[in-house]
Length: 147
Image (tube, rainbow, N blue to C red):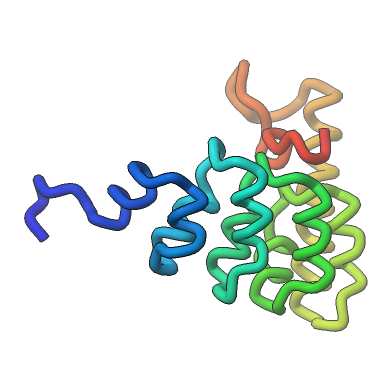
């Protein structure tokens, strides 16, 4: 591909209706749509049932995905999806608490570590002692699902 030519996957994800890509796009295009914050919640719900773990994880990590969909993916998702959520400190605390009791040792450990990061960020933020530039929020506080 020539560097000046747009990537066809980006073109599909940006120029087609999200529902169309969710049903007919390739895996990379579906994951790109799942990650976009302006993807409608109905499309995110559809993509949460995708056969691809990459697409499901993109849905789970999208801050606009309704909480009940993220919770469902955390409970019934594959180990790949659960591990992705467990290792992300922006995952809602309620879900991290569930993942901290997962059957998989690595998922449990990642969820517990993410809880510690989240707790430290929240504690530091409330005390005003973060090392984060003024006006920026610590990692984990940008996700409106747990606010």
